[in-house]
Image (tube, rainbow, N blue to C red; front, top):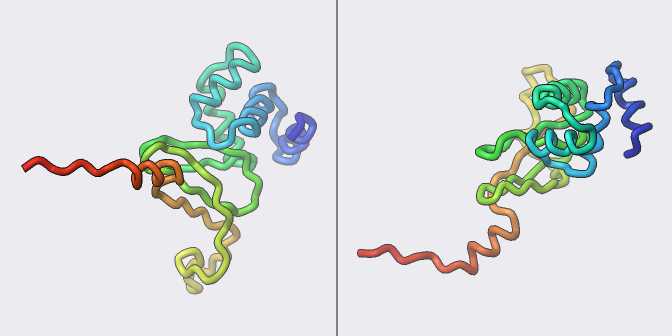
Length: 150
């Protein structure tokens, strides 16, 4: 996306257009699934001295208004991506922390639909698959399992 698009998105969200917000959106476009530390470094490279807290605040507000999506991972901290509102899911590798986009599964999935008695009309279901990425799964099958000593 170009800066003009980000400016429009920020205006639509009724947010001020700041260099930190624009640089964060650009960083997420270039580096999806980034952690906050990576984004702080990337934004600092683009803008110079920006506080870590400023970037955390930017991530919080952009997530709150739906421009950024926060992905919760076990053991690897939060990761962030531009929210494309396409209802895709994620695979988080439990060995290396790699995150991969997974298209939304179609068909009946009772765990995704809230109970009818709740009165909730679900618009998006966030699913995180946890397992091994193809690279770690490959090395797990080719690496011999050590035999326990007796």
